[in-house]
Each structure stands twice: as C-alpha cells, then as structure tokens.
Image (tube, rainbow, N blue to C red):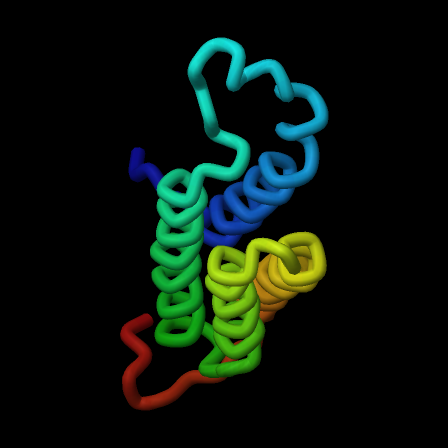
Amino acid sequence: MKLRINWDALGITSSLACAIHCALLPMFMSTLPLFGVNIIHNLYFESIMVMLAFAIGSYSFYHGYRKHHHSLLPFALFAVGIALLVLKLIYVHYETWLMVPAVTLIVVAHLLNFRYCRVHNHAHADDCNH
C-alpha cells in the first residue's frame, strides 16, 4: 500500500491554520505573555510559517503544473498571496489589510490547482510522464 499525500489539501490546511493563528490566537490566548510565551507577534514564528506555506505550496503547484494541467494561473495567484504575506511581515501596521487577501488568494490557488488536477481530460504535453 503506497502512501499518497494530497499536497493541495495540505496547503489549504496550512493556509487556514495560519489564518486561524493570526485571527483567533490574539483573542483567545492573550495570557501567553504572562507565562513567558510570545507567539502572537513573533517575527521568527511568522517567518517560519510563511516559509512553510511557500515550500508546501511550491511543491503542490509544481506537481500540478508538471503532471496535470500546465496552467500558470494557480501558481500566479499563490505567488501574489505569498508576496502579500511577506509584505505583511514588513508592514506590520497593515497586517489585517494584507493578511486577508493573502490567505484568500492562497486558498483559491490551491482550490484551482486541485480542480485542475482532477479534470479527466487534462492537458498533456511532451514532458508528461503518465
């Protein structure tokens, strides 16, 4: 039995986990600094989350592009979303204004990639190996 990972589902899950972290953690865990834990506006933690989202998403979109649909639209939406996340790390005063469209674009990109990969008559090119 071969283990198969659905990279789009993993990407959507990590994007939503990031959104939940950014939206709900400050509301429910405002007591963390009392215990010496600062995860709310921790630049290192948020940078690692963005790099993790970039790594998972890049592999997912590369796999979908190379083996299934040959469409750059999902990767373009993902790239804009990641760029907005990086800008969110730089311009912390505009965090909400940058985070909401960033996560929305990343989730939509993963959903498009997932849909394009599931089309039965998907595009074949000379580089397809299936």
